[in-house]
Image (cartoon, rainbow, N blue to C red; front, side):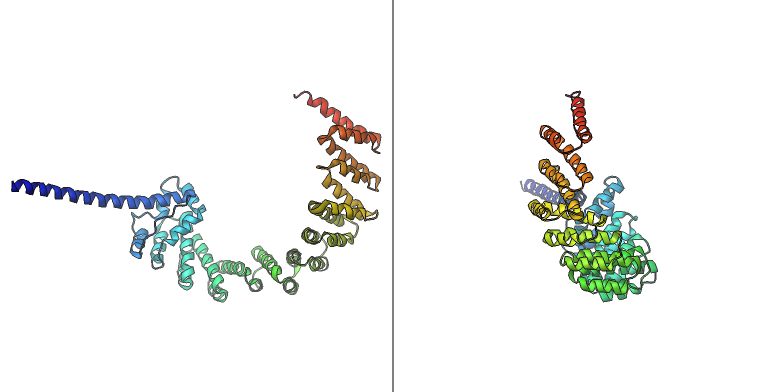
Length: 431
C-alpha cells in the first residue's frame, strides 16, 4: 500500500515538473514571438511598438545576440529585402520606437552591431536614429563616435545628425567641432547643416557662416532661406545686411525674398524696397506681385491706389489682374464701386477686363454689362465675344437673346450663333 502511494506521488511530481517546464518554454517562445510580431508589424503603419526591455542587460542581449530579433535582419528577411527596408524606413515612428528601446549605456554595442550588418538603407536609418538619441543625451560623446565611423554614406548622415543636434544646443561648439574635420566636403556639409538649423533661431549667425564659403548653389540657397527667416521678424535689419554683404545677381534674389516676407507686416515698406533696391526685370515683378497678393488681403483700396500709379505697361496690367481677382474673391461689390469711381483710361480698362473675366463663368449677364462699358472698341468687342461664349454654355436662350440685341458687329454675332447651332446639331448625333 505504501509503495503504491509512493509511486503515485512520484508520478504526480513528474507531471507537475513537466507542466512547469512546458509553461516556461511556452512563455519564452511567446515573448520572442511577441517581439518579432511587434517589430514586423511596425513598418506597415500600425501603432504597435517593439517590446522595450526593462533593463540594460536585456537591451544588450537584443542588440548583441546573433539570434536576437535585430530589426534590420529580421524585417529584411521576411519578404523582398528592398521592399521591407523601404517600408520600415518610411515609418519613422517604428524607427524612433526601436531606438528609444536601447539604453544609453548600450548605444555603443547597438551601433557596433549595426556596423557589422550588411550595409542597407534600413541599417543607415537605424544608425542615425540611435546617434540622434545619443546626441540628445550626450552630444560630445555621440560626436566622438560619429567622427571615428568608417567613410561612407552612413558616416555622412551620422555626422550631419550630430551637427544639427549640437547646433540646436550650442551653435558655437558645434561650429568649432565641425571646423576640426579634415575633409573639405564633410566640413562644408556640416557647416551647412548647422547654418540651416541656426537659421530658425539666429538667422544672422547662419548668414555669417555663409560669408567666406565657396560660391556654391547650396550656400546661395541657404542665404536666401536665412534672409527670408530674418525678414519675418526684423525685415529692416535683414534688408540692410543683404545690401551690405551680398553682391551680384544673388543680391537681387535675396532682396526679392526679403521684400515678399516684409510684405506680410508692412506692404508699403516692402513695395518701396522692391521698386528701389531690386533692378527692373522678372525678379522685381515677382516680388511686387507677391506684395500685391498679400497687401490686397489687408487693405485693397490702398493697394489699388498704389498699383494705379504704376506706368501704363504690361507689368501694371498683370498687377491689376492680380489685384482685381483677389479683391473680387473677398468683396466683389467693393471692386464694382472702385471701378465706377474711375475715369476712362488704361487703369480702368485693364481692371474692367480682369473683373469681366472673373464674373463671366458664374455671372455672365453681369459680366456682359461690364464688357459693354469698355471704352476701347476692339477690347470691348473681344470681351463681349468671350462673355457670349461662356454664356451660351450655361444658358443658351438668354445668351442668344443678348447676342441678338447687343451692339456687336454682324460677323461677330454670326460667329457666336453659328458655332452654337453647329454644336447643337452635332450633339443630336449622341443622344
